[in-house]
Image (tube, rainbow, N blue to C red; front, side, top):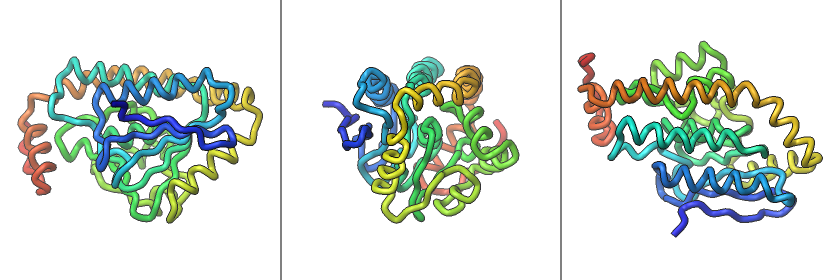
Amino acid sequence: MTEVGVESLGDRVTLVELRRPPNNFFDEDLLTQIADAVLELDDDPTVSVILLGSEGKHFCAGADLRDTSAASIRRVYRQAYRLFSGRKPVVAAIQGAAVGGGLGLALAADFRVVGPSSRLTANFARIGFHQGFGLSATLPAIVGRQRALDLLYTGRSVMGAEAVEIGLADELSDDVRSTALSFARRIAGSAPLSLVAIRSTMRRQLRADVATALDLEAAAQAALLGTHDFAEGVAAAVAKRSPEFDGS
């Protein structure tokens, strides 16, 4: 059974929805399904804009780390890069949390709509890991280098209002899905071929930067997989306690 739904919402907008609630943790298979859906819509002349959403409490709480290896990280990132290869604008509707790789998924979109209780977190340093999913390129491009360093070094959470204030999100709403759909429809009112051409030009450098970042991130993550701090960080996150790192 597919865990990614595709549904036309009318007015040249199509929903691509993660359906692995409540947390929508991703793995290679789920990312493959998302990328397949996004790229298939490139060839649909009735679609101008994609609304990226998810079922459940959280937009995406990150990667499923249960079977992580250097090889699996690279396979996952091949699928992540495919998402950046789509030609049509994407608006993400972010309810609940977008954590770690889930934040990376959110930042692959062109725009993000959040709610007051939405929580965006690049928590990698808090689990003894290195950032991934192209965040080395996308995060500073969106919020600037200094804010990106703050978010990556501290792993702190950014709630909806602050996310809009610092540019990490574009609109704040009590009805995230409805507002994101209205946002997507405003974009879809423009000429379809113009949207594709503009997006190609505006994201050309980003795609190149993401390709480089994913390769570097995969290597950095693989180097940290066997460390005590990574094991401790994951254990602490599961137990919902503060980690006790020792630098080994």
